[in-house]
Length: 91
Image (cartoon, rainbow, N blue to C red; front, side, top):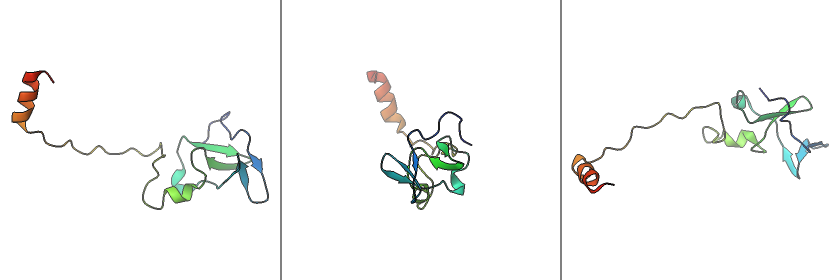
């Protein structure tokens, strides 16, 4: 799902693949589908933030992924006595 008009400006197709500013780009993986950072160049889709998207998914989820929402972990418990003292001081 790439946005028209936000393609990879200045990219060049070479024998090794697609090159942008001296960096060889690899196509996106299945996990990348739905991300807002996907750009299209000559019928293939590439990540606009990372040259080798498959490596970003090796340890879990990609930290650039816009289509995955992170669940917020419950806040740490606050000592009520300390909280009341802070409130009294005006912090």
